[in-house]
Image (cartoon, helix red, strand yellow):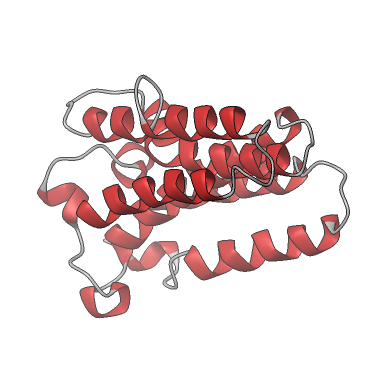
Length: 183
C-alpha cells in the first residue's frame, strides 16, 4: 500500500515540476489526478468498497482501477492541449479490463506464475469478477471490455500503433491458462 501511496504523491510531484512549462494546464491536470485518487469515485472509494459484502462490482472496478486509467488517458489529452472527453471511454475500458484480468490471474494462476500469493480474493472474501461471473464469464467479460476499449480509441496520430500496444498489453495481462484449467 505504501508503494501505491508513494506513486500517487510522485504523480503530483511530477505535475508540479512541469508546471512552469504549461502553467495554464496544471489546474486541470491536478484536478483530474485528485479525482482519480480520492473520493467519491477514485482509488480510495474502490478500495473501501472491497470491504463491503454486496457491491456493484463494475462500479467498484471503475473506481478502484478504472479511475487511474481514465485519469491517464484524459490527462494525456489535456497535456497535449486536446479535449479529454473522447479519451475517457478508453481509460474506463482499460481500467476495468485490467481489474478483471487481475481477478482472473488470482483465480487461475499459481503463486510461482503470478509472483505473489494467489486466491487472495477468495481468502479475504473480496468481491471479484470470477466470483461474480465464474472463470468463463470473467474471460468473456474481459474480452468484451478490451474490444470496447480498442474500438473507442479516438482518431489521432499513431492510432494504429496505440491499438497494437493496447492489444499487446492485454495479451500480456491475460491469464496464460485456459478458462477450463481453473476449478
